[in-house]
Length: 70
Image 1: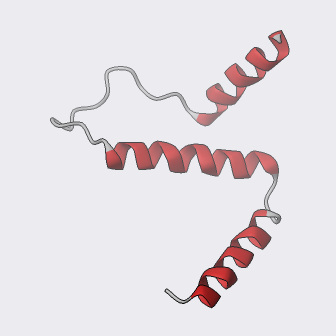
Image 2: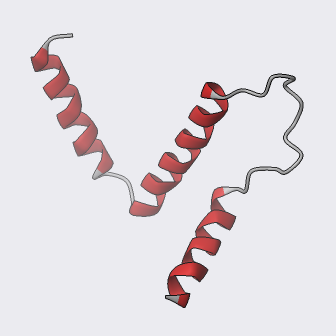
C-alpha cells in the first residue's frame, strides 16, 4: 500500500471518529474487540459459551460503578 493512501485513510478515520459521540466510539470499540476475540480464538466445538459475554450496557454500568468507588 502506498504511504500516501495510508495517510489519507488515517486522516479520514480520525475525522470520522470526531463525528460520533464518545459513547458510540467506545461501544464500537468494545463490540469490535469482542468480535475480533471470537474470530481469533474460536471455540473448538462451536457450542454457545456457558457464561454469556456481557453486553456493552452492563459493561459500562460496571465500569462506572468501579470508577465511582475510587
